[in-house]
Image: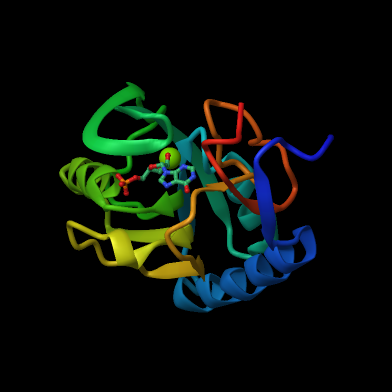
Length: 180
Ligand code: IMP
Ligand code: MG
């Protein structure tokens, strides 16, 4: 794929992402030792992270997905979340780990965690690829995170700008004023 217009710099290379996922997967393996884990990927941003994380785990794993749409200016959510595709199966009595692309203000994930907690899982954890704690408005406990990032808008490895650039194998900072 050609370099996207407005790309300012690569934040994490494909190798750095894959290495960090292996480290976090080892932590998750230890934490849930002897149990079966249900991963819930939040669509669409977490798809590449979900598939790489799932394959880096040695635990027995089940996978389900939850689709959301948040009403917002491009990319950044305003805190209004709607479930556009629900889980396929019940999570009652399961050990559930939610897999998210990025936690920014926290509104999206807080809503989802409350929604999932009400369905009676045995445990409910949260794993995020990116965490931008500097913009947090509502507090959400994060159990596993790959990278803490700054204020700049990020694309690639699942993250989009106007639905583009999700298929980049790296994470990069984009200048939305110069992007298409
Ligand atoms: P929150 O509800 O403010 O935590 O927003 C989280 C959601 O906003 C994420 O799931 C992304 O869809 C989107 N988002 C926030 N920051 C970025 C970014 O830098 N790049 C792409 N999407 C982002
Ligand atoms: Mg998202």
